[in-house]
Image (cartoon, rainbow, N blue to C red; front, side, top):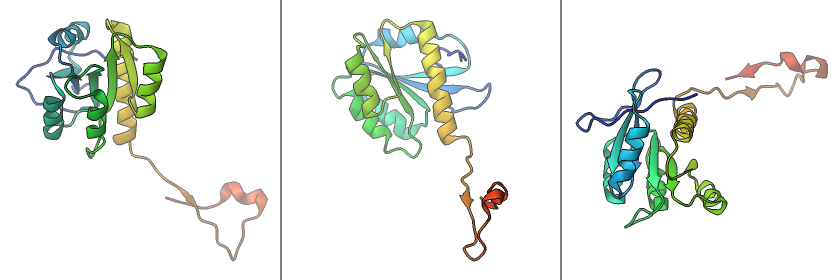
Length: 174
């Protein structure tokens, strides 16, 4: 499933949306060319990309706005992408973090996933891979925080055990 992305409208506040509405993405990189590259790859109206050039500006943005996805450069100086990941964990509804890097080898990918990043994108960015990863990450975030779940417990009365042949008709409480 591919979900297209739009060039940012800087004066419009980010929104989290379901369906055909806009989904906000925060792009964090000290290089303006990374933001321009992402915007040129993903030029449709279902995504709104917001930019941060530093860890401090990304942190300030995240305290003021809720976004489901962050695309963060590996070399985020001063600061690190893991510091940004740690800060997102303090939010009520943390966004999914996707890291970008010029040298995305197996060790970096394993480290990123072990620390808690959702995925790693190799640079230069590929349109198909970026849309696949963003779409998958958004669906993951949406299922985790927007779709209600039901937890069920088996309620068997100790005084009246249910025969084995009737276990499938036992009463479940929600």
